[in-house]
Image (cartoon, rainbow, N blue to C red; front, side):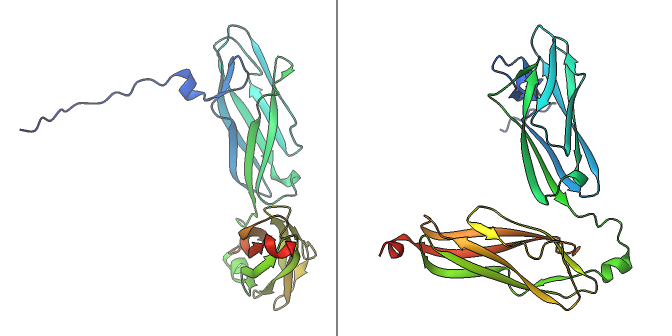
Length: 254
């Protein structure tokens, strides 16, 4: 025989610690929902607002402020001073027009409680800054630039340690309007991206290249590095270029 139990499972109420996972101070008097305020995609033409619940679990009022906040970001607590046991919100505004970066960006700011900077913890802010293609008509899209790469991967093969190698990614504007390379960035300092194409209009049918220098340094074995390219091509606004190498440190010691 099979025993079947029917009924509604009522979940237990979540605790303050589960709802507000990030204790800002060592005494855990003030807690945020999380230590990460994510703005996700933010168009380069816009201001975006995000909020996060917070709580004062102590028996004293706490005034909340922030330090190390960049010009493109504003953060404030509402209300600014939380009474004992009171809940509130962090209100964040990201002004992408004031940030020259593209793609995934992040900042760490410090929280100030009753005038005291909390040096043991950081509040993490992230955003993905993207081109605003929302105003393009069907005709605009048909006549858009096209970022056409000969290859998205360069394989350097076996190279010794402490060696610099220049790599080149050739591309053509296969579209009908000027192609603009908005920004180029690498994932680490070993790949110095040459920004000679950034911000320049590349005419339809014209070819050019993105160059970088890879320094094998103290790497050992297989190494893969990424270079991110941001363009005004609606279908290829963010492209990842891959650089592969196999570093032999013994070869450099000979």
